[in-house]
Length: 154
Image (cartoon, rainbow, N blue to C red; front, side, top):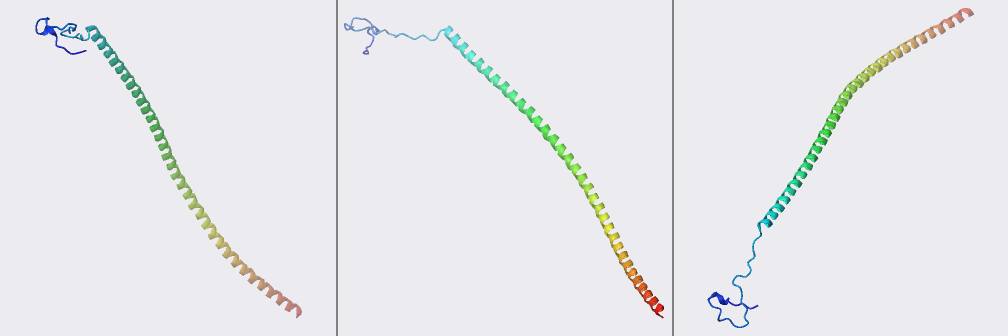
């Protein structure tokens, strides 16, 4: 399509060449959206916004529930750890008292052993002394027998 100036623009239409097509002064003007179309678009945007808000709200609720679940689990684990610490502290205290009792028993045992060793050494000395006395008595007895034998011979 060739471009031409509209012949009626400056006045008469006499100077139009034959076969020339008359171009309209304003080509078809596109009308803007109608009010109904605008309302539909607004409703569509409102629906999408409400959907996005509901979706965000559901996500927030789910996250809140997960956070609450994690907090409950954390409280539970914290309680279990606290209970275990209390149990271990009690065990350590018991172990300390048991260790004290064992040490007392060991000291008593050592005292008994030392007492036994002392009595054993005293008994050993007594036996040695008595063995020496017996040896002297035996010697004296032997001497007395020899003397009796001499006297019998005389």
